[in-house]
Image (cartoon, rainbow, N blue to C red):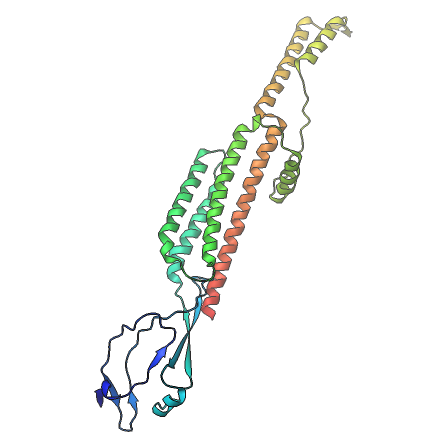
Length: 321
C-alpha cells in the first residue's frame, strides 16, 4: 500500500558532493509491504563536483565518487531502521566516458583538413604571390574556425587538453610556413644584391641540412673570368707581331678582325650572364631558400603523420577500457 511520507521517519541521507539544490519532483508517498519493508521511490537530481582529467579530451574517461552519509545519525542508528547494513558512509564510484564522435567530426577532422591543404600549398612556386596570399587565407580561416569551435573545448581542469596543444601547433606551422614563403620570395627576388652567405650558413644550411633534405650543394663551376682588357692586350700584342705564314696561306686581316670581334662578344656574354645570375653568392642564397622550403615541407609531413597515428591510438584505447 502507499501511505503519506509525512507519517514515517526518513533518514537524512545526503550526498557530500552536492553543489546545487535538488530540483527533482517531490513524491509524497512511500510503499509499505506486508512484511514491514518500506520502499522509498523519491527521485534525486544530483549536481555534484568531480575531479576532471581532460588531458585526452575528447577521448577522456572520468572517475567520479558519490559519498552518502548522515549528519544526525550514526551508522549503527541507521542500521536499526534500515535492512541494509550501513557503515559511517557509502561511496559509489562512477566511471563516465565521453562520446567522442561529435568532437572528432566538428573539431579534429576540419583541423586536419586545413593543415593538409596548407601542406599541399608547398607545391605552388615559392616566388609566386599566390602562394603567400593562399597561406594568409588559410590562417584567417583557421583562426575563425577556432573562435567558432571554442565553446566545444573544455574550460575547466587542472591540465591543458592535448587537443589544445594540437590546435596551437597547427596554427604555429601555418604561421611558420607563411613566414618561410616571405623569406624565400625575398631571397629569390633580391639575392643579387646580397653579399655572399656567411661561413656558418654554408656549413649548417647548404651542407648539413641540404644533404638531410636531399638538396646537396652544387660544385662550384670554374668560370673563366674574361674581361675586355686582356682581349685588347692580346689583340695589340698580335698586331705587333709580324704576320706568319702557315704553308702557302697568309692569314687575312679580315679574319683577324672577325676573331677579335668574337672574343669581345664572348666577354660581353660572360659579363651579362654573371650580372643576370647574380654571381655565385646569389645562387647560394637561392639554394638556402629551397633547402628551408624542403625542410619545412618534411616537418609538415612528419607532424601530420604523427598526429593521425596518436589520435587513432588514443581513440582506440578509450574504447578498449
